Image 1 (cartoon, rainbow, N blue to C red):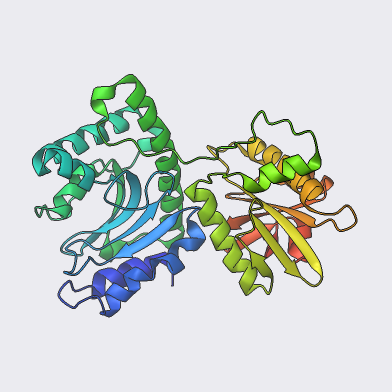
Image 2: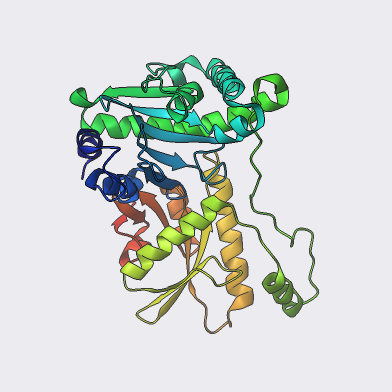
Length: 359
């Protein structure tokens, strides 16, 4: 199903009184299968027709899991259908529940509007051009009004005049990039103008390496420390590994995603692949590639016998470019990343069945 067909079908068939078993409600819950090709592999996708009682404004939400996994807090991207189902807004929005529980509904909405305005004003004009700073979902008290207050910027579409499929995809890509930029900008504002940013700061769950500054006297000492350590992976990392592990299983590999300290191992046709997954943060491909090379070399050397070395592959959250594909290939490392069509990769990865097409 195309994005255009999906949005139109939800709007034209949704009935909040029909219950969670109605076709439109089921279609909303199936959102991951429709949107996964167009969303970073590390993101979480949730479609909702409400909990219990039908929602006045059904939605499909996209979460950067290092920021939030729920629409009740943090910043997220969301398709919001208006109460009359005549429009749908692709909105960069903010969770309201945490603020309402702390300040009450009226003050929470005021703070959401203030924070949204602060972020909009700080964005370069070329990033906000053509986007709406106001969305109209019907103005109903409760969540619809909170969504209106939380909107930072949005594309607003008339259901009867939806743009082309190519335009919808381009808008979604643009809003994902805006989401990533706004997260960074919000934290800059939090540090410099504290009174403007009042939402609760998300917990940071990035990689924390207890082997930092550790200088082992022997291979055995290193392996013991490596195996015993607790390396906290970000939710983006965990989501990437889980999704790719599912692809490997479908492709006929015996895949293990719980093989601490390795991210993934995959076996097929007599080959064992050692796979290191890396989140590309803020477009810093160089850093992710260097980390992948170092960790793959270390794990292969210390965790496998010299006469039984695994083949090596690096998995990334986004395309890394031809130069880095060739660099990794020269090190004997295949590379894979998600695309709208599935999983793309280097020639070595494609030939091994680890990806569906070449870079």
